[in-house]
Image (cartoon, rainbow, N blue to C red; front, side, top):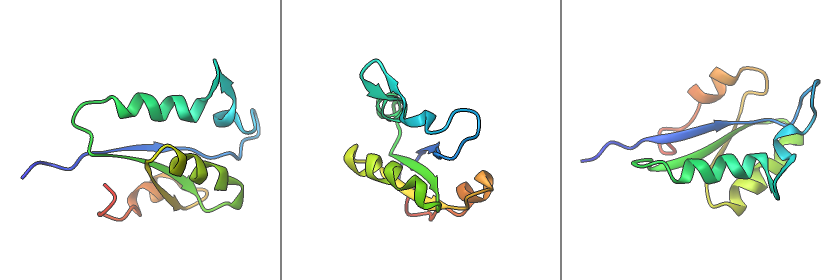
Length: 92
């Protein structure tokens, strides 16, 4: 039985210094889409999961995950580590 290895991408849209930075255009694609594309080529990864907060502002990120056919998880808005630890085992 092979190990299941997930690639976890943490992202949120709430930012004081550069709001919506993950949605910014980077040579024709959003930054988050470039990150997703790069993770999809990593060998031996069984799943890519976009981990976003429960803040309603982050809904566009869930839509991007769906559009790019990757898993997504909504967790704690302020504590990124808790967000990762709360991931269901079925996802990763």
